[in-house]
Image 1: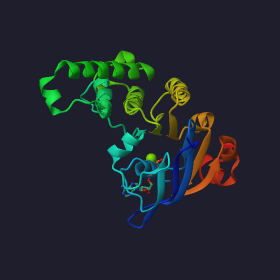
Image 2: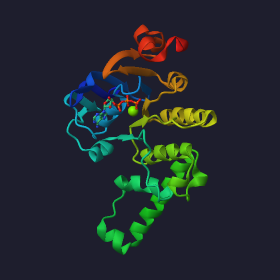
Image 3: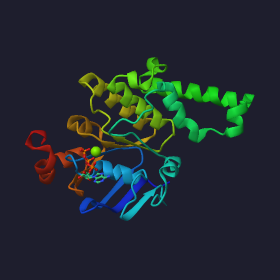
Image 4: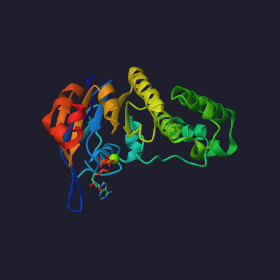
Amino acid sequence: MSDVLLRAEKIGKVFGGLKALHDVSLTIPRNCIYGLIGPNGAGKTTLFNVITGLYKADGGTLELNGKSLIGCKPHTIVRCGVARTFQNIRLFGHMTAQENVMVARHTHLKAGVFGAIFRPPAVRREEAACRAEALRLLQYVGIGSQANRVARELSYGDQRRLEIARALATEPQLLALDEPAAGMNPTERETLKNLLLQIRNDGTTLLLIEHDVKLVLGICDQLSVLNFGQCIAQGTPEQVRRDPAVISAYLGSSAA
Ligand SMILES: Nc1ncnc2c1ncn2[C@@H]1O[C@H](COP(=O)(O)OP(=O)(O)OP(=O)(O)O)[C@@H](O)[C@H]1O
Ligand SMILES: [Mg+2]
């Protein structure tokens, strides 16, 4: 198996007259935490939307495990092994934390309409296993005690962790997180950092958009920096931190 998990080459995306992405290329190796940073409006979320099939790229190639994702629908891309969380949390607010995760497990369930209506023993066993797996994932992200609370009542930080549990429920090879630390306090951020390292150590590659520079430079193995839709730097945190173009566009001299 190749060391490369995801390869994007010359990805373009235009909104009206705005080039949100202009020939953006990146290669994500397996088993790493790959950072995507840059100022507001740089195109980071747009790139996530292209990778996860919500937006169609206007040009370029995109491959996961050497297989093209261009033209694939979002649910197909999930089945190929890419899961994500959203910058603006998208949970089912009226459902419990556990139910939110169970919904995402549907990609792994066999029961059809007949089974859902008549609920024979095999379907009930599958449902029980799904419930147990959802609870395991909630415990894994550190919110097992919140399993029966409705999502909209959880703290902001816990909602973000619930989104991660829900994404993990699809058993992704690549987990793309759009600002997972946003709205978290310093203690929650430290816990999140350990969780992200744990996820990587357990074999899932991470693609991370994050404005918390200390967090992102502290845990990423490699990064790409976007500015006005273009990739202005790539490399290790050390290389990126010292890059004059990155300092001028995003980090400022204090992070150097
Ligand atoms: N659906 C859309 N229609 C029109 N313009 C869009 C759309 N989505 C994004 N844009 C524009 O594309 C540019 C890149 O936006 P994007 O959300 O990708 O930035 P970002 O790097 O994620 O920024 P932030 O750090 O603020 O989240 C912005 O100018 C934005 O206004
Ligand atoms: Mg964004």
